[in-house]
Length: 132
Image (cartoon, rainbow, N blue to C red):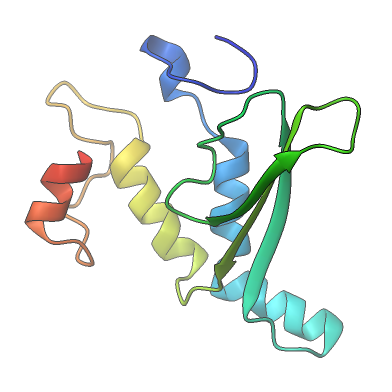
């Protein structure tokens, strides 16, 4: 497996993705509550920066929008990506259930362990197109 991402196949592709999990959690209702309780300000948006050696990063694809890509001012990295997204209305439990359905351990029929059927928020056509 190469450092910094890229297309992966086999067992490495099935490893947990800590950054993606952290972004899911940060966009949740619970994280919004904690941020509001701590700062006394109601957050509406999440912004983050990622540094990498590669000119393309797919780690936050589908969760955050790429706001900018530029040459990094940090000498340890070549590129800097700035991402952002409006905060969502899902709970951690809802997102974990969806994650488990899509990425959990597969049984002999190819279904994720604990799979309960299609995601109610996604149409059949979208599931086919995204492989979910």
